Image 1: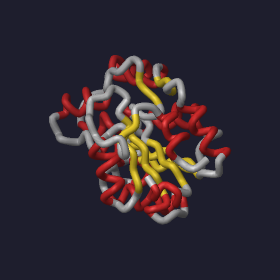
Image 2 (image 1 turned 180 degrees about the vertical axis):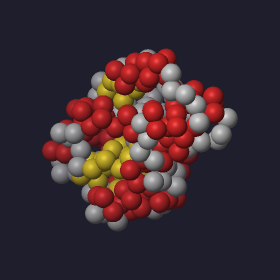
Image 3 (image 1 turned 90 degrees about the vertical axis):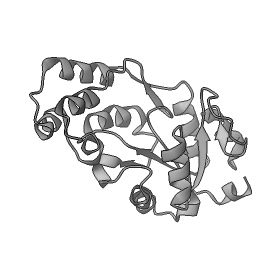
Length: 201
């Protein structure tokens, strides 16, 4: 953990890390399955709303999928500690970023929840790359104006947020809210509040 003294910015995954979807319905996944065209990755790599994605899939958009999307968006909730942790890190002088793989419609609720607490939002559909692709992390570094080793990535996906970030030269912590992995204490946290005890404040 000594290296964390060099951290200038903390980047957070969104879903599963800062927020959850209480009423999960996965309309983009449903639409991709209906198309059988192997286009699901495009939903997070390009700025496509539901209608544009339906056109890409070659399927007719239906009211049910739109209703599912609206239900999901309305049910996005920040975890209890998320805003307080981001606020504390900002007060301590860290730059804060959102770093998320997501489709276009999910960006607005995130920005509404955290716009006052983040400096940058590196979103897959905007940068044309998705975690764990090193290109995503290169875009994040450029946005923050930091060297990779100066950024701490925090997220709940072992492959995308931990291994992907480490592979791109960033420092990383894995968030395991449910205790499903038994990683070393030095790389896994169970609650975002633990960051305030780990990072120099």
